[in-house]
Amino acid sequence: MRLNGKAAIVTGGASGFGAGIVAKFVAEGAKVLIADLNLEMADALAAELGDTVKTIQTDITQANAVQAMTQAAIAHFGKIDILVNNAGTTHMPAAMEDVSEEDFDKVFAVNAKSIYLTSKAIVPLMKAQKSGAILNISSTAALSPRPRLSWYNASKGWLNTATKSMAVELAPQGVRVNALNPVAGETPLLKMFMGEDTPEMRAKFLSTIPIGRFSTPEDMGNAACYLCSDEASMVTGVCMEVDGGRCI
Image 1 (cartoon, rainbow, N blue to C red):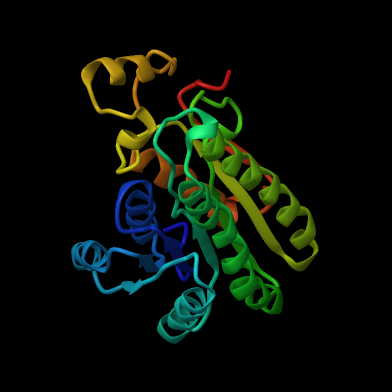
Image 2 (tube, helix red, strand yellow; image 1 turned 135 degrees about the horizontal axis):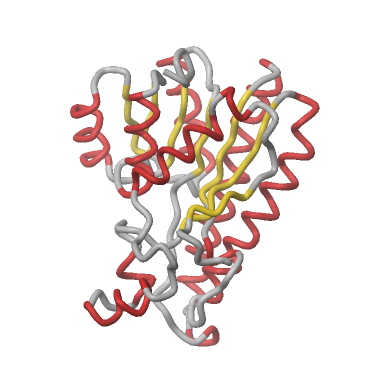
């Protein structure tokens, strides 16, 4: 029960890595608000995990929606101890000059602007209580970029730098900020990363991961639990690779 008594928000928590993080947090004693565009999927996960899980439909690129998410967490739990910025998106693999402006804007709205918006809403609350843990879900793309995903790679590079800057600024106020850098996993984004989901393409991706498998929601949940728990009270500004050795 490493998160016993903690209250958490997990954006994009209805599926993929987010769902793995939510499940682990609940198993470790946390109360969790799932903030996701897909409310039906979020409600299904909440029904499976029990009444310590609440849900809200949230577009994390919109300031009013992020404010509503924050207010809902306070209404349900009375506080916010943990924020997991997990929601993310990508563009289909393409030459950098062929990615549409619409896709570029979407990637940076979801992967970058949302961090600004959640920070604007929640950091003041954490400062006031002089404690808090923020976890940003980045990617190995920030460290070892694959070709034809240039603007996605760039958005995750931005997120790693933002994580370190947030960490050094907020440390004196008792707020820790870390990131996880997973390799591709069995999530809704996998097909978009690969361009097409075929045995050949999967084999190509797996050949770059020394451990020889994709990352799982459980892998992410375990790493997230540590970084957001009091066990990691001296850990801030870390961008932890959960990648089976891909970035070595």
